[in-house]
Image (cartoon, rainbow, N blue to C red):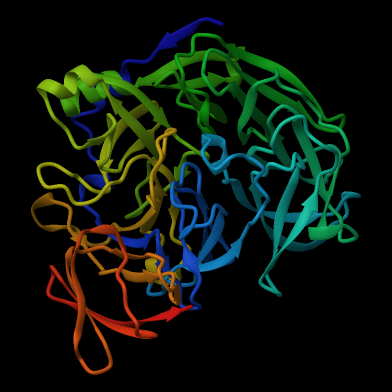
Length: 544
């Protein structure tokens, strides 16, 4: 298919004004390796999704590439935030068995791969029902069973919903979609399952989790391709699939009633990134909507009103090199795990969307122009703001944490952004989360920040409010074993017995500290003095 390039966004980039010209105040709200109020361990190497559901926030994490499987067992979690002043709590822990060797990369591939909240207004027969909002999560597993989980909000539990059958590969569902069939009137949920296809489910209270799944998929993308997104555009459902290593991608359109899918676009020029961010946006040329997606480090528009003509709207590396960074960029993986989300503040009349991305520098460029990075991946939590007013389109890059010239945090990859559902935030607060291990072993790197757009930082410089996070685990600890201290500040820690006699003292570094010392005491007290002047007191219990 012929692809055109749109230069308008580049021309407007530097000279646009928008409600995002103010600098939001970002505050870290989740640090992996800490303990919730019920004593449960909050872990994760990635935050894959943050979803608003019934006035609360739910985040799905991942333990992919987690190297510490003793203090941090390889099981993904969903954590919950009940209010802007609350702390994240563990809502559920998924403990699928893993049959791989602990030394292999795949043994850590335990992810909440997809999670969405959908409002069902009709049942499996198309009859109207009292609207029922369901939160659905799809953690990956190695038992080759396509099983998703649906939250029972009354019981605060998660119900397994078995799609049925046995897969030829581990279960991986990277996207969930929703659409009300215009012919049958049925509210339908769709699961895109790797090496299996797109499966439809309907609302039926006779089935676990209230979802009845079809036994066979409606469409089967090529083997090796993952279904990476769904969107409804002009009341038609679309899905996008692509090969994980790049090289091929396909976009499909669903015909309601019969449930058949037609291929409307094929892409074959990928360079190692798969298709992301399939969304519906206002049509710049007139009424209705067009499709938007990211592929090969560029954003595209696909026009249903013009035989699905494909226009390259924006080239991310070109812009980053030319306007923001001044050094060579290797790749940009934009709009990670979801649609680009609308986020209008201050009654802005423009259509404003935000989406995160991962940036990798060219390794040779870093030699001559060092930048904050981890194995070449940028670590300062960047995201894009796309603003559209009629045919005028602008792109503006923003930081959650600008690590230059002072390193403030390690925010590799903004995977997910969500508008705060809390009434007091007035729709002007974003929650962002992420990290991507990129096949590199790491410990507890998942992060979530809160961005308040109602309060501008002085002189346009981001203000990072640091809430000290300090946890000791496991506690109790088996005699002779090591324990870990996770802290957001460096400092010193003193261990002493019930008589006040010093047993040991250590230096603490920011993030993770593994400690082991000998003691005949069943209880050891500690006092930590951190760099910001605060102190943390507690006790360790040793068991034999």
